[in-house]
Length: 122
Image 1 (cartoon, rainbow, N blue to C red):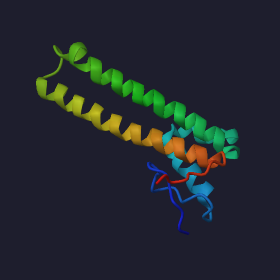
Image 2: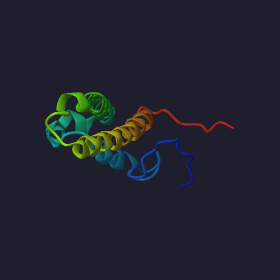
Image 3: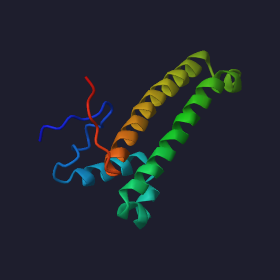
């Protein structure tokens, strides 16, 4: 199936319209949220709702990473060696990058689950 996908479409999710694409979308979304979310039948039954929960969870994680990056130096400077602080800053940066990509993926997958179709612009 040759379908144009929007920027940020996760490689783990098959293109909309492909066989089992929604199953791959649901599996990917569940991988983004805490494992306990799998116990909620309503999230399995309504993938659009799962996408909303995943968006909220990813957004909260991104805000936490940003806050950690802004505050770790001040809050832990006298409790950790400089190299630990620098490593923490790097970890926050990497996590932030990962979460920004995940947020974009949730946005485009959620849109596809809601029936939105992406049309490339020239």
